[in-house]
Length: 193
Length: 199
Length: 182
Image: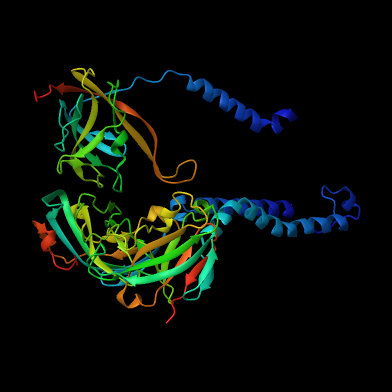
């Protein structure tokens, strides 16, 4: 009798263990997710092949720039977020092809493709070791995603188990966000070109 | 497993328990420790070969001024020159860095250059482990008839042809004097050449 | 009796396959008609079709090639997913196809240029442009098929999350405005 109870108890424990393991198995996305290196604005955050230092963020409702000899104006239904950062390759020539603005609720905004011809854009720019580059990542976001966001680079989905950087962009002050009505990129200081 | 076992249980139990059988079962379990990794390695053989082919692991140092046989040709470093900023067509990004042009004189010895030189990689290295990859400037070539390593593989080259292989780089100003060119290609990787710069 | 208990797994499997095969032969339900006007929730996208017209220039100002004309369908497009997406290519198809290409080109009317992507929860006015030979007959009321897919937190193969099972949500009838005489 004791033997039977013992065996039944062992069976139940094994079943519970298996069930617990099945319920707590991470989703495939999480298992092969990239390994993040975190930091804040002003920190130099290091990934495997590059380091980044996010310096400032500005918001504007409209961007103006000159490209290929023409004046261009870009409007948006939300906000333009201009992140000024310094990127440096660590040991090899490389490019950071993607960057994302992750809002406080987890929405991912990829860097804007509407700004062809703006020279100081860092996404896709060639980085040589020993020659850090200062430039911009420009995103088009909803106004309610501006505070408490995270800057993520490069693409977490294309870098399984590789390292990505996640830079916390801060919650901003309690007051209203400083949003410019229109920003002329050619006249903006800070980026070298 | 059970507390009390009648003496004849061993003969009528479901699983035979004589010592010879037990020894073989144990050996088989230990054998798994060997069999499983070997199976994985065999299944991944293609990937491992590709990985091995793509790594630059073993350096073959070339003293300054000498020639060496590599991937079916004789390689000699001609110059590592710093280009003038203006006329080289250097895409002046951010006003920093120095354009450097490397030129090799290569005498073809093997007719199969277009296969041996696949995925040819010429880069500049310093002694701290930094590696600069070749870029391309838009400007004119400094020598008539020079080409990049990749362009040399576009058609078969007859043995005896002398090729001028030229590649352009952007390196920091202070590294321009000390960087050393390295060459690697599918035909010889994981061995690669590193050309030392003499005095 | 022994056969039934030992083979119960096999019998169940065979029975299940039989039921599924019979079920797969049922006639599909007719594709529903979607009303023109209210927003259409189509999986990853929320679309409000606005107008359709035949034109000789695409919305980026370029003229269509000689011997061709363009069908321009304007709409408001919102990305319902949590990441910027460019999967609007298979959102709308012409049903029946009137000799036009399979996938239209999407243009952002704000920039009057190609649409690269739409960001999460941001609505943009876009135009889907089909180019077709000049002689292709476009009916006065165009039928568009709206495609949708379902979100699965874990899919059946890898357990990855994504939008799977693309199918037709319904069809839409849009009156085509006459081409402006060029």
